[in-house]
Image (tube, rainbow, N blue to C red; front, side, top):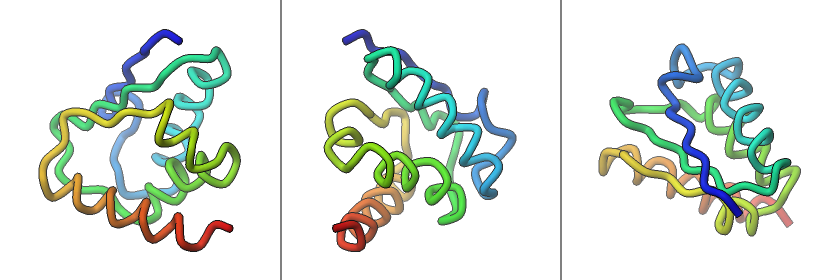
Length: 98
């Protein structure tokens, strides 16, 4: 599997709306469908909303499962605060998905 990097700030106008999350989701799916590994760069992004995460990461978990997230999506260039938010979101979301 080939790694392909998505620079989030180049795909999304922001990281707070569902629309921005859907834009990221679509970019992720294109790479996953080509059997690639997604590297998400959150360079220069300090915060994200739950709406953004629901429409991007949440949809990936819903449609492809948590293992796809763990094995085919890598997150880079993040602040400690952003890492904590995403980690908490994934942990909470994983508890809801059975």
